[in-house]
Each structure stands twice: as structure tokens, then as C-alpha cells.
Image (cartoon, rainbow, N blue to C red; front, side, top):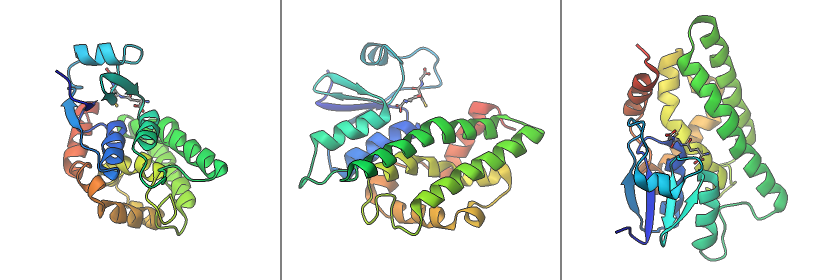
Length: 219
Ligand SMILES: N[C@@H](CCC(=O)N[C@@H](CS)C(=O)NCC(=O)O)C(=O)O
């Protein structure tokens, strides 16, 4: 028997962390159902609730699935709107920009991360340079602001902060310090970690890197 609001996910899934952070920002109670991604066969629940992509996270609200992490953040924002305040910027241009950068994280940053972790030799050096470049672009977007949402922790903060659980892993793997390239981004991570929604959701950095090492067969 499924509860009223269920988040199906794997604990270390960066896409899924977004959903848990958004729900916690809105102070919404939910049930967490773990999907073991080490097993190749997806559970019956995932096959039924997300037959198209068979991926997690999935938010099941009153038995109805919502799929795709960014789509889920927007759903949460619309359903649990407090004081008419939204997780997305108020103006259309700000919203378009926030969605553009969330897409950059999903399409560009995640694929650069994978190349960086999987490749060897010269390819790894090139991927490391790309990764630093991607992070620097995000540093530029942040600028001197407290959050990507300005004074308010919002949509783009939620989309990006799960990636920071691999920052220590990047540094150990690549032998560099993110702070040397992106000082504001590092301060932003510290600021976000002061929020309960984030600190309760993000996994231990060491465990995250160990898991990625195992996943990609890194010695
Ligand atoms: N665009 C999707 C991506 C989700 C995704 O790729 N999930 C992966 C884990 S990182 C997954 O569930 N994979 C299951 C599988 O491939 O069997 C989102 O934002 O939710």
C-alpha cells in the first residue's frame, strides 16, 4: 500500500536529491522508497510508474507518478505554494535563465563529470579542464550573490547543490582545489549546507566518491 506522497529514488542519486530538498524546503512530509540501482532490473514499481525512461526519481502523489527531477521540482513548487512565493524567479526572463542553467547542469556538467571520472591520461586532463570550465561558468552565473536565486535559495540552487556532494571527490580525483578556480561557488556550498533541507539530504562526501569509484571501476 503506497502512502499519499512517495519519493522513489536511490540515496546517492543527484537528480533525486533535488526532489528531497524541494520537499524539505516546503516542509512537506513524504515517504522514501529506495530503488537499488546496483541491480540492473528495475523494480515493478519503477516499471509501472515510469515505463518510458524506467529512471528515478519518481514522485508518486496520491498514486499518480511525476517523473524527471526538474519537472518534479516545478510540480512541488506549484502544489505546495506557500504565501504565493515560488521556487522559480518571478519574472519570465529569470525563469527562462534558471531553466537554461538547470539544463546545462543535466546535459553538460553531468556528462563532463562522467568523462572526467571514466577517462585516463590525456583524456582525463582534457575532461578535468572542461569540468573546471563548467564550474567557472556556474560561478559566473552566481556572481557575488548569496544564492542563485539572489537572496532566496530557489530552483537553480536546488538543481545544482546535489553536484557539490562530489566536489571533494573531484578534488581528490583530479588533484586540484575548486576554491582556486571558483571561490564564490565554494562559499555558496557552505551557505547552502546551513539549510536543513540540504544538510539532511546530501550524503557524506567520502561515501559519494567511494561509490563513484566502485561504479566506474576507479582504482
Ligand atoms: N532526467 C532524469 C534523469 C534521471 C536518471 O538518469 N536516473 C538514473 C540514475 S542517475 C536512473 O534511474 N537510472 C536507472 C536505470 O538506468 O536503470 C531526471 O532528471 O530525473
